[in-house]
Image 1: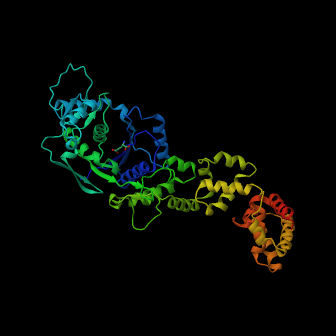
Image 2: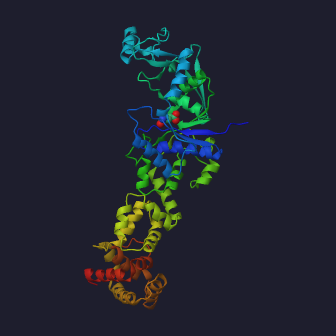
Length: 473
Ligand code: GLU
């Protein structure tokens, strides 16, 4: 019978959640959900100098924002010292690990003395066979003893296939520092065993750690889990992803008005595919996600595609939901302040009006706030093209009709303006474009009727008249 899947995401709280980390978390989470398994979060905070509490919160906030949470109590490595010591003592007693007193300088001096620096890789084994002195006063680290018969070690990776590491690529690596804290490779093995992790899915940068971890599993008598190393995420020019290619920090996307579902959908496609499908609901991702769908090639982070996808999601959402999501962006306060003269219903209408036209919620807010502002200048090219003697007459008539229009709702306003154009036998843009210019300062805008109704009679007529006064037509 196959084991029940248990996976984990194990971030180090030394910085905010990045796109790459989120993808690792997502792949683990989807893998678990797909197999009705368990997804855990473990905080790897053994590096006291670099770990910070605020980053723990930031990592969990980013995960919670996209709907990823641990199925069991979150494990903190800093609280597991006893477990590490117990396993360490066992390894030392069994001579599978040994105390090492060498400093980096000692080692360097010895290697230099051989005159053959190129042939030396890593530790030279100086402390390997020192007898254990229990009264020892000096500080020491603990090294793992690579089994002497080892010729090579094979990593079977569910994405990359078999990867062989030769003996000379490995040295007796440190598993415990002299300050009494465990090294990453050791703590990870003890914890993954303790949590009964069945599949370790993580970034490719950890592949070179895997042979060491396998040796540790074997030495500890633990069963070895399955491994899957996910290819890197690169920038479009093939370089390492950095700020200059767009934000790498997940919560920055929240502030900038990206939708969590859109971001997740974008991220799942960084290295995973299922045919040509681009848009996936969460349930579809869960149903379809397998490691066979993860490619071997590096994924390319393309912010334009993310923008496109975010636009798709924005168009699908209802206005109420977008209104709530706007409150999570960096524009929330200013938006609410600037919209104080409008009812919630008007804000929802405004959202509906602009949502087909934007890539993110910050842009949506900007567009709406622009509409709230009376134009202070008019686009001269638009004025030249659309303000003609013919349109001027029509425009004046439209002004009068709108002033008397009751009720000032979509169907009445539409009827009045369309009939006017029919009566005068002019095409609708002859009137609509000057109205657009009056309302927004230019001709790139959503529907004229909708804007008029949204602004209301008073504001609309005021803007129409202001255009007449300012450009004298
Ligand atoms: N703490 C490691 C990291 O953040 C986790 C590596 C692992 O998943 O084993 O990269």
